[in-house]
Length: 486
Image 1 (spheres, rainbow, N blue to C red):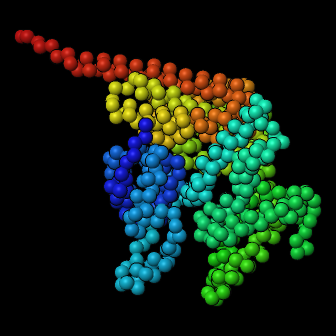
Image 2: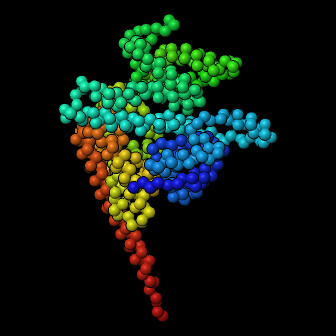
Image 3: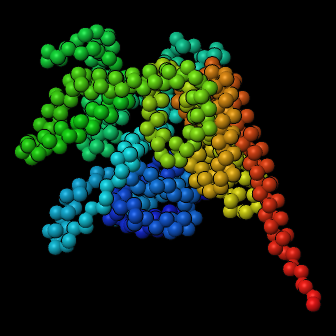
């Protein structure tokens, strides 16, 4: 059971350990992690973070560090928000403005640290853009799964108004994802998020949506283009918001400040909506189609796809690179109505559950058992893996090996039986309705149980062997040296 904790002291300690408020560009949180974007990662005191009882682990990723807290991470984030100077997700102060203030006060401005690598910046940005919507997407998948089940059992008709209302609750977040995505993307690119959301909403405006779903050749300002629907899209929105951020900054430089309030959004909308239709939409759709073609080619070898995602997707999660892959899989799911990698990729989560249960049973260390028990609980119920991954598994190569083997077994079953999902959801009990609604539900859950059993059994065997080796070493050390008599 997850205990309530007073995080004020923890927030003070963690802030100091990452270099103080001045070293924090921004700190946000996802389901279990505090995600610090830092000016200089070299200032992080890893040992100090590791000594905090609330910290389950530390990961260097995405141009900063992730402190693993667990399901109580919102409370930890709220405690950080109380500390003066810590930006917990609001508007950031530009670096040049900070330098100007320091100079005006007679202080020498701090030299900026070396910028993070491009890949770290990309991962950090994608993480901040998508993190707020992962629980919503998972909840939508649960609603869709429950609705599909009640329809299958003839408890509700698809023609009823009740079904229409509930179906809207389950699908709206997917269809209107461009609006939500445009908001957080514009915010991360340092543009006005409300203008970004309006651009996204304009692309889904009924009259325009009717025009763009026709697939016909139409024109804007005399420029011809092929109409395509922006509903449920990801890549075109990201490209468009990135471009809009530069347009907004340029407008603010050349226009008198007194006109910014009205002219920036006016020009932004007039320029960006046609640009989305004519430029960024086609480019984004082209990238998405290329990914889809590559994915379709890989589907010719479903066994390889399922084995790779089943056994090794856990490593992608560990380094935070799932924020590159998951949006693409969501786009494929929205386009095709089904997706294979999300099913096989979840096997790693269940493999971790099997390992955690074995650790809870076999390990004698009380602290390790408490961490394993809490991590197993949140994994089994909500499919949250980070507490177990960083608090237990990644610290022991035996456990990590058991996770890989268990995931490979689950992936093998998924590949052999053509397992796919029809809705996105976390693994675990809460997400099970979404997986039960899939036509491949039976082999999917066979894969789940096989994964848990294999990883559990392998961990038990490896742990017993390790205990025997430790016992043998202790026996050898306890035997006194023979005394030679002369």
